[in-house]
Image (tube, rainbow, N blue to C red; front, side, top):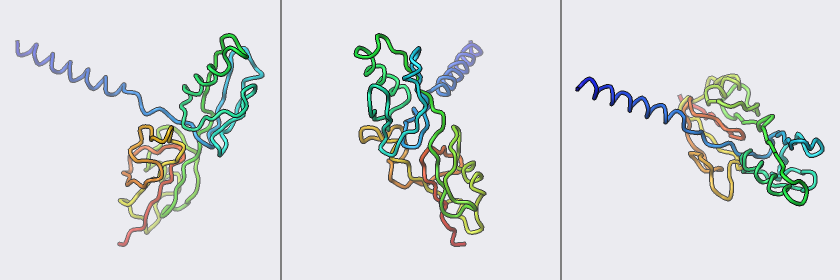
Length: 189
């Protein structure tokens, strides 16, 4: 009886870990600088690759300027389907994919401050490594991030630990987002 109970408890714990590991990550939000591919099935004249401008909009055939900043790729697909259906197409099928993410920025006590190409799964320690590593004077405990305003939709942050524009202390294994400005401060010792 005790053996069965132990197996049941272990199974439930294992199931709990499986469910937690399958939880969806915060959905990516489009912003100025992202390069996206929009494909409209069977409509090559409407399919295009376009970089999102500083205004957070794109110019789309038949629709003119479309505001995309703060939307997820899925939400943009739904928006385009809604606007194209009826007056232009009977049953449009739209796919939006990210070709190139907007860059992240490294400042402060790193060997090569500047902007760098973002890739999914990027952590602070990897970002510092991309920027040439710490300088002699770098503080390994005073690392801060300011999130890009593009992560905001309707005035609210979307799954961020800190509001855009606010400064937050980071650990080396925290995840970096596109548009983040990471600052490594100077150590006094």
